[in-house]
Length: 467
Ligand SMILES: [Zn+2]
Image 1 (cartoon, protein in one colour):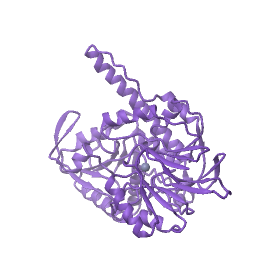
Image 2 (tube, helix red, strand yellow; image 1 turned 45 degrees about the vertical axis):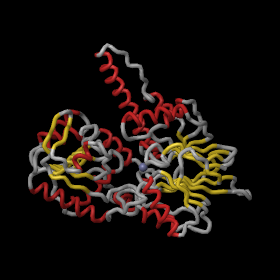
Image 3 (cartoon, protein in one colour; image 1 turned 90 degrees about the horizontal axis):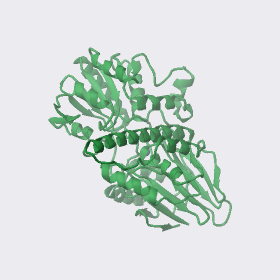
């Protein structure tokens, strides 16, 4: 039996892992590479060329770097099943559709630019909305803890990964009941305890082998309870100054989490009742998906939802805007307000318009709640550069900039070690580390060996590991 990764091994995007049992090939995730535009586009286009023909595909969660290239499978003629949870199916469809839409618009724009120069632009999009619809036909949804044979020799069970709504780790049993039975657990992205809305990462039966992510293999996060206090302080002090709080946020999970926390703070009287706008069509759509999946909520959210018939994603002060006109009208709001808008790294979307309107006044606060990659507008703001360029114009950054780290959706190294430490370490033979940069994986390996794990392998992309 062989284990190997074609992406998302020595980096954090483009997740694509395989288990070849000899009788079947199981593919885990089919994510997009992200980063510098040209480089990631080339890597994503290469996926199509080297696509294997798996017997079954498993999708762990709906982040673009795990689901974004699934349509290339159906485009390449794959007609097998893609197993995932119901919430992930819904969120992943939204994400893939959005990507197809962006690709189509980019193509239109590049064709227009080429024609202006008298040239012909030949490139095709990676995939279209039609390909996404075809991918939708391949999904078979499976709830948590429901064992299901996915090939004649492999049974799969999903466990809640506590990372985003619907996220799961996949527990595979190969040759069940035979002398040569083996179990392998693919962690997907591992979440953390005590997050809003979703449950903590679930306890799993100890596998023989584990493929574990290591994004924050060399980092420790702040406490989540401190984050609430800081959020309350930032909102209250900005409101006192009659300013606006601008929150660039990822449309999925982070936005709903922030909404949830703001709802709580309003109920507790810890922040004043000021208008809150969610100005991102993608976030609004994602929130409606959150509303129809109470099976993924933690106990507290479930109780609010079912016992008190309250909607955790809607309250008096909160307004979801969809049309461009509604979005523009936010500019006319006098007095304090909170504006949550995508893109999370300020590279696209409506957030840029809100920054243009508000970045020059010291009354306002830009609140960073997520990861800001290098070379993005969000990163430049986070670094408090004196001047930043938005839509080609230069703006003086006079607004206050604050950052809350604790909303991370990934476990840090102590949390990963505690999670693995609870397993039967006599049974667990090897942990294979993927989804992390070099330093992160090296540190996590050290920590896991100290925890008592027998063997830890740092996975090299393309290399086959015999198990
Ligand atoms: Zn993820």
